[in-house]
Image (cartoon, rainbow, N blue to C red; front, side, top):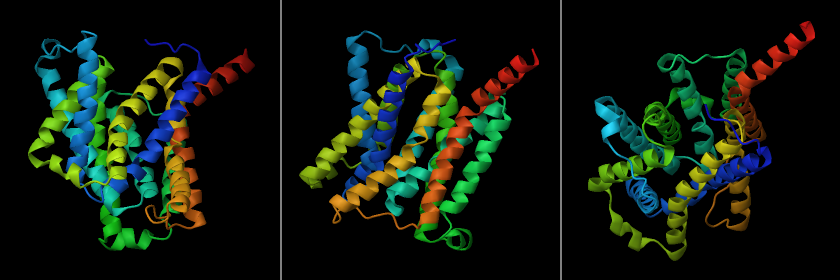
Length: 318
């Protein structure tokens, strides 16, 4: 079993870097989507990230071998490829219809769905702390959508379609997450991501229109490159954070990502009002976003918090 290095401050810094990079990503993507379609943007992101990982693994002579996967591993790989491809495309389709902050908040459902799925697939335990965190998170979503609950529940507007599309992106990401967890028994994380990224890009090639890149302005071109590199840098920081800090605490830190997005949108809409629109939500919605983050963090920290409480109780009884 992996044991963290104990350099928790370094792990915290890396987790915060990951949160910031993921938090500003939808703002950059929103600008690029004004010219390019979601499939083409996804194709570029996956092709560039996968190619860079391939070059790294080839240079270090660590390219994965497919024989150890076997028949079952092949099906898992196909499930991961399909799940991640659908997740990337659906996320961008939803982002086209929603604001960056709303999109980033709704996608927080993805790790919760993975947690619930793991209860049935891997027979993992669901603690009282995680259940409390889930209820807090649901309360936060209710507060966040307070202005548009009626619209969400009664009509299929563009806003409702956007929310449902991002929820679908979170749902299919669950299949990718479950499959990747099993693939890690045969390959390391970098090998898994290289194969999945390149396979996803190949899968999207018939529908991608690479020449759309010529229609981008210089700023949009740089933003597209930043989006491509974001996948690698953020993931690298995330993986390194896990090496130095407990996974539950890294996950709790990453729960801050939606708040990073909201703050970034507020700043960007002030600095570049002609390019970035402010979030159209009231103070109750902002409070709901904070509650969602708290619920997500509590869900991640639930098992360790309950274990600490039991240990403290045991010491008192002793």
